[in-house]
Image (tube, rainbow, N blue to C red; front, top):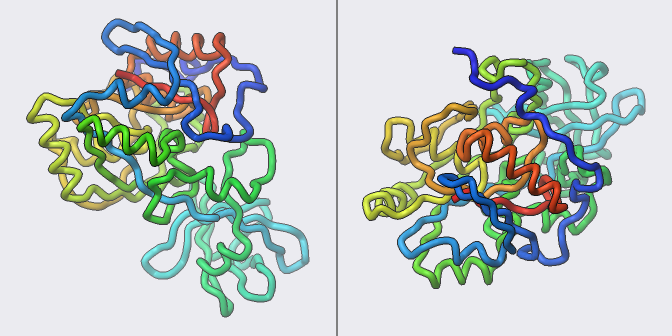
Length: 344
């Protein structure tokens, strides 16, 4: 079925200097744009106000995936440089990865990392992915620790720096596997989490290992023709129990980030959240019926992105685009290291 909106409807203009190139010195020092879904009213607040917007009995669900140092710079057999971005390991021991320069990394070609290991391109897949096989006396994890860089997104126009290893990671990150941070969680500190708990609000965890599919550019004029690359997720039993208790008590389920939304709505498509693991290719764009999520904390997202479309599906298209115009007028900091937006 054709979408109600076209790709061009999700375009907007912003000054290049609005893109945050570094995190703020303090995680919780970000600004917070608050959008009331029902009325469309916009408020400009500080992120430290976020706990006061929740009520006892509400549950916040967060993505505890941890970013791996997945960007590896090595040399091809002719000595020329090459870059490999690891995505995830396959059951047979091969890995899915992306490579640059793409035209040179054909099946049979190799990329070496020091004297310890190399990868061979086994197969070229769709969506820019390649299947690679490791060889050498160092494991992929050891090579990542030795040579890997934090895989900052391309709109951060600088090389990754040592502080990014910690700052491009949430304070509650536990399960390794993402190639990009679930950025709505970057604003939280231990103190903020303690404040939330003191208000009688529970935290619940899910995992979605963020892959390149989350950031894959939408090229189709009709968003309905876009396909998401699959990403692995997990919903533990305790999270199901806490979400069910909140809903039974008529309290809100607040998703911390778009990746959390996709997990909850994937595992809750029957109307009741279910425990389990799997792969999701769920692409949320307007119109969409949300069955689990009542509130959303997120960052500001790129024009024409699947993330912006998800926000528009949740908050309403007109509300979302008006909020983005307000954020730009008020000089909010944009994207991964930028400010936050709460949709209540």
